[in-house]
Image 1 (cartoon, one colour):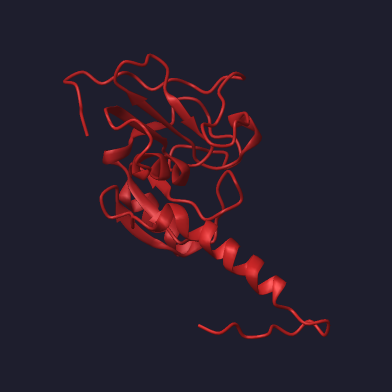
Image 2 (cartoon, helix red, strand yellow):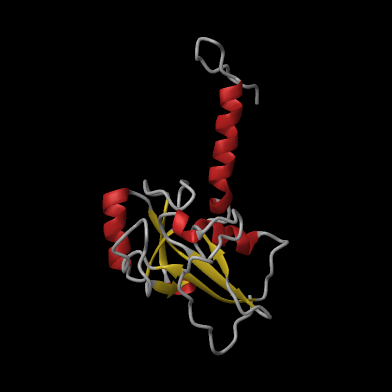
Length: 170
């Protein structure tokens, strides 16, 4: 990754802020959001979930000259569904809760960011999950829900009329 000495400031979500992967407005999704600035582009890429931002970073076809990444600090947000302006934290400075019971913007498991580790621990106590630094968020995490959804789809296809699941050979 490439970083300049002076990071751009995070922008606030507006009615025109559209999620990179789903092309939907960010206000249509609850939970933490993310924005990624890359070299030679003034506007950030917006994400309806932090998990989607991790996927963007990993996908080989996406820009790699990342200048800054900001995520919603859910320890500062008072409203899960609509985090308030001014709740951004630089992504590498956050601690993340993964595998909690709370769902993010697309209704899937989310990497929930906090600038205060104590607030992240409180969140784990209430919602389950595990703490991870930016570097410790598992590489498979952004894609695991999609894989689980595909497995469920295949399991639904294997159901017999009685509602029983026919085991698939491995």
